[in-house]
Image 1 (cartoon, rainbow, N blue to C red):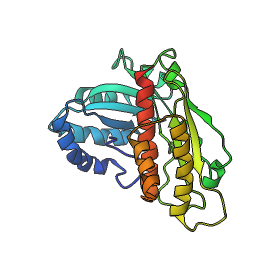
Image 2 (image 1 turned 180 degrees about the vertical axis):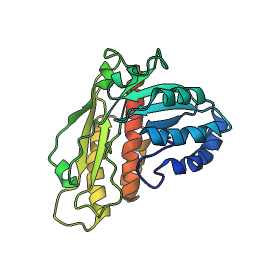
Image 3 (image 1 turned 45 degrees about the vertical axis):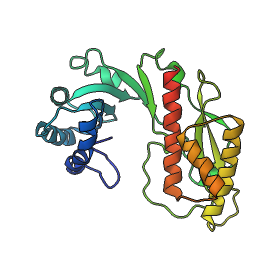
Length: 258
């Protein structure tokens, strides 16, 4: 869980205390629980350090590197206040500048692999494509893990109107030791934004037919199959969450067999 989000309702360090308070039962229940810290900018990081200094526990944390450069003194304080577990960066050279503080960092490559389209209907003609091969090559490239922005991409978009096409993004592997692929299962474009539920069930029938033929299974896909069986529409937000949940299962499986 990111404790200093840069977008959305919980944006800003001012919400960090609230986030940590809500997460406290999870920290109490599991010693493996970790927080995510976005290395945004020097000013915000200093404010975050003040909050961490007043905390009742020393958090285990993963650092997410962006375009900002954080001062070495600030990073040293962060290392003192938190047990830093993993460094997530698109380029491990971003981590190298702090090698005095983190001489042997555990680094995971973090990339935006989702080719986001302007409109849902733009996914309709797309064929199967490779989502990522980082699960195959991360160790060879000098990383200890890999990560991405799931099936939504790095760019945050809040809200939106009813879609003319419902698109469900599904990642999967054909075999455990190969790349992660993606397909976009879409309702047929008809120029109208009416009947979102019907559009979902049309796209869903295509997804389930593919998943059944490929013998794909995980809790997210089980829920998709249940929706089709019951002819139910859970809402666009739930569909997006299930797409993300499926991808997490796929990524974990790929990592376990890397």
